[in-house]
Image 1 (cartoon, helix red, strand yellow):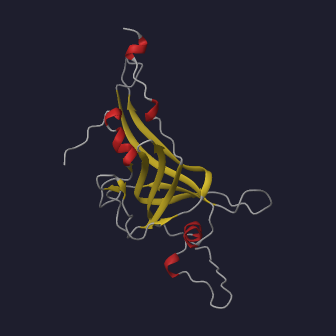
Image 2 (image 1 turned 120 degrees about the vertical axis):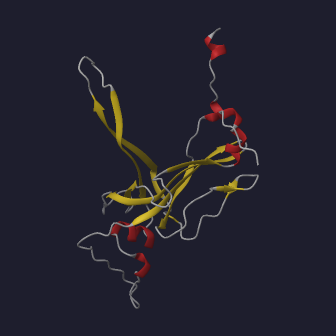
Image 3 (image 1 turned 60 degrees about the vertical axis):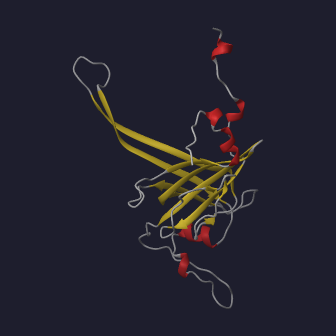
Length: 219
């Protein structure tokens, strides 16, 4: 058999994120259960309380995964005889470009539910808390690719995420706007039992199931 007969490469299975959004909701909001609905696999409405961060930098969103392990070594073996994962953490980073209540509240750590501008001038001032409140959020990264059969959705959802790092803000000349950089770390939800979920869906995805080797359940 030749390699040409053996190989199985399908260019229609190569995915890119052509567009997308990061949706944020307070911890009290309902979780994401299904991203799509119906026989045409259209997007389902998000639960109440999810808000789009808006425009982000051209870097889009990036996800990191850090793992640590412990090893058992034995006399006479040059390799570990056992290795156990002790840490498996997923993070998501993005830089929001829109200045609005959501981004201001997240970057300052203030409670935006009670945040109001002054009656006459509209001025808004926020004092940095001595001890920042470890606020938790639902974070849904929804990314879109196109295919001849329709949109393909690749989403990553953290039901219990906290901002663990902030990007620098630059105020000066140049092409870069004032931005709000966030790194979210996902923690296990005590009610859902997971910290991170991968979701693949959409009409384009539905049409490619067989070519991707994925079996669809019967109704």
